[in-house]
Length: 377
Ligand code: PMP
Ligand code: GLU
Image (tube, rainbow, N blue to C red):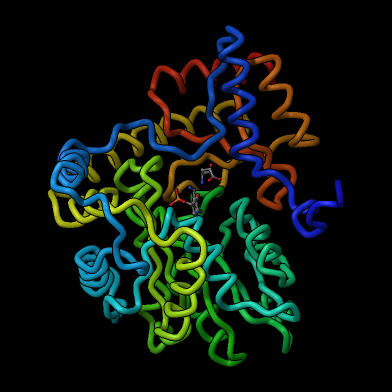
């Protein structure tokens, strides 16, 4: 057989998915593994959302839809972005895709040329760099400020004429930190002064415990150069539905839609009706889940601190990010093989020396995981 794609051969597997698959395999072999390696709410999708999808299936919503996404859903997303996030938008600027991950990939394909550089603010989620590389452009990394994980003007050291886009995530996976207004204003100024696009991944927006969520696209004219990515996976416990969305300037949405037309066409029609129910229906379920995550966050962070671990500011999302002694890959491997607790090494997020623990798991499970980790050391 002839050689497979050289580009893809250089792209690593997704660490979050690979480690979780390994933990799943160990469980299937009868090992009592606690899996805290994937960022997935352990709650079921709220019943009214599931019911809306079942109704849609029964009512024949089983046909192709507009490739950009169901118009009713795009209208609801556009209203949500205007009222909650203060991002001026029109349904024509929304693309509904198979998860925020798909939106990010489409945005890269739509915007990037081979000579372009994309500045990724680290610690960064595992799929940003691969999606830049799949789109054929060059990823460049820059670490957020140690300690508070906010942006500072050292970012300018990595900006040049080739810089096309800055990618960041708030609240952050993996650190849990939330970008403050000063950080976002600094990124805004850099983007405007240097004609750079921002890709702002806001998928953990609803899971916030300290500080407030600010969308960079709400600041001044930033909506004219920002791709805001969000989705249903985390806020509404809808990971398996594969439903996300992006809001961008019209020329970018049009290009993203063309990518979509030649790849996925659109997400499952009935899933989009579920997404509409999520946005339009009662929001108490989101608050209930947030409060439960907050309870677990307080427990896990205080236990880890008590055990002597330094942790990143856990202000949002559902991750504890802790500093470890030595090689984080080895630490995670030991925790998995000896303590039977699956976690993700910071190296996967371009931050060696750290480990990410997801607290999207029941309190008893977390207590047991902490006990096992402390015993292993
Ligand atoms: N962005 C971040 C930061 C994430 O953690 C995830 C994890 N699922 C995604 C995007 C993608 O979410 P989904 O594709 O499930 O909407
Ligand atoms: N985003 C989640 C995580 O970081 C889910 C897995 C993935 O898509 O990477 O664990």
